[in-house]
Length: 239
Ligand code: FPP
Image (cartoon, rainbow, N blue to C red; front, side):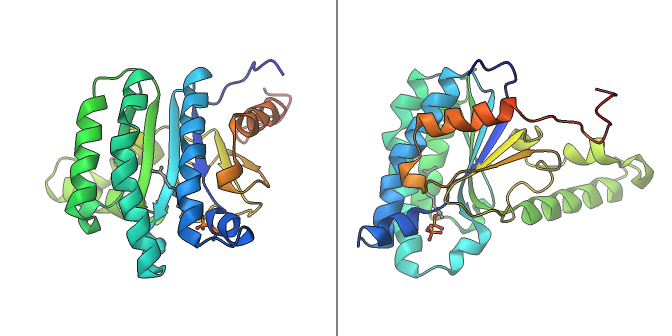
């Protein structure tokens, strides 16, 4: 299908790694490892289609409650992927930023985040956000704290706050509203992902488990997006 409408910001909840592994009688962590191929294909496809912003939900604040072995494996994977995929990110002119609460991450993860962010800082193509120890509610609370500080420091009056101004206090690289949210594995939830930015997003639920997600599945989501009538609260006649 010809893509006449392109989303500026695509967000993806990469779900189903555990079920993928279970179906194959593998440990859950094998599902996360297999999911890296899907991450790579997704980034490459976003670059090919010239999508400006892509945000991937890799680890939610609630995910710390998972078994320690799984959390440790995920953290090791993030550490490794940030190094292994750096040449691919550079070749594709991708700028990478990790969004989330960095205070609970290990030094190994933090230092590789720093290396990858610095190495891709000047890139001008796809803005790739990877959300780690992130939740939408956390982001809104952080924004509220920053707003309170600004008011206390007399940098801003409470009455100046409105929806547009509030956005300035969200995490810098994900302030762009999400146009298309893709969630794999058939689950139909937002799961505390960019809840502010998703206000008018089109939601697309794909039955495939994340490790099976390929470029043609991303293409199918874009094809479906072409059929959506986005009204942003207006009537159809007003559009
Ligand atoms: C959800 O599946 C997936 C995750 C919590 C982790 C996602 C991480 C990766 C794909 C690895 C690498 C990613 C990057 C961006 C470096 P689940 O475990 O909730 O699956 P289930 O619902 O079937 O149990």
